[in-house]
Image (cartoon, rainbow, N blue to C red):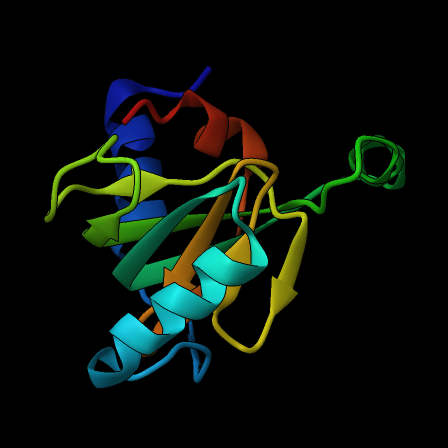
Length: 139
């Protein structure tokens, strides 16, 4: 069984330890243009712009990978330390956000889930994490 201190260290590592630097994302000066592109392509999805983001790939077995694929998603989620903008006003600027699983990634900046398009602004990082730890994180 994991001790409380170990659990805290695991969460801290997932949220704050460096991952592999990614050059995905757009410059913040282009954000308004990119928002309009996202809204035009995905009119039925919420559009959110985020910075200080992390792409989380899940460590999964072949069996679990098949389950993800059967559900039309990939074993990856997005976490951002800072929400810049939310088309539906669900979250306020400056909040942390965690996506649902990735459906597809487009244009080097659109992290698309079933219901939302997350615009990655600036550079971020990517790391492999335990999916059980991600699911237990409530934001």
